[in-house]
Length: 101
Image 1 (cartoon, helix red, strand yellow):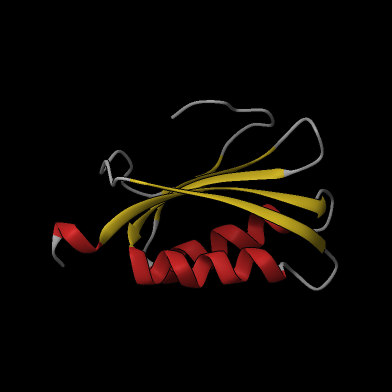
Image 2: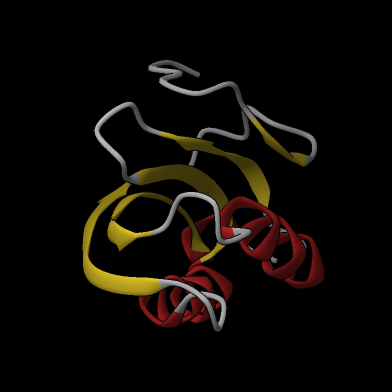
């Protein structure tokens, strides 16, 4: 895996995404794709995730974010692509309203 293929995706998901298992849905997909980072509920009712890995795998996760679990209603996904940092060794859930790395 060359470093040129690596990227960081920061995404905020809007809609009915609290109380529907959205964070666990993201964890499951991120772990399956071998991605690192975190997901957290936001105080405004959204879900935010910061994820690193191969760009192609991040694009697959982004498509999953746009769909969500069966009980979610995803209205919008705001995405921001940034350089890879290699900051995390795994993927996990952060506490609500978490704002940093």
